Length: 201
Figure (tube, rainbow, N blue to C red):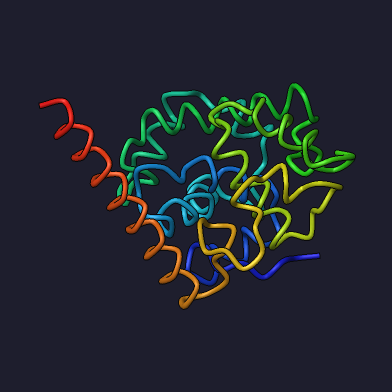
């Protein structure tokens, strides 16, 4: 059953994210150093360029690396760093083919606890602890994937009523709140850095 998602803020791209586990994983992978909407539109852009009804991990994994990089780099590019991100997307798909028969949903299906699911996510290429916790929170809050202890495993991102990450974006209003939170965090980090520098003088 498809889930209603509003991360790309573009109907067709969001529809794909709601029905394709691989698209959700690829969107999360791309979500760094570019605006969230651009990242989560990426899976739909890739699908349009390779053709077909759904993203297929086997197909992407087997693509000629240079051809796939060219496809991701084509304007409008899928990411600010299309070459390196094309490589990461292929590595992710190759990992899914080797460990999960190419079925992205198997990463979370059968995970008995939030801690186990977090461990599985952290094993994915391109997924560090923070990205894994955010994706775990997204699965729990919006995709109904809620193994025992999932909120705890997701850390602060799992908190109910929080506006910290993509896990909390369900439309334009929550997007504004999450952006405001991120700005506050950036500002706080700048102040802390300046205070440390002042102490060292």
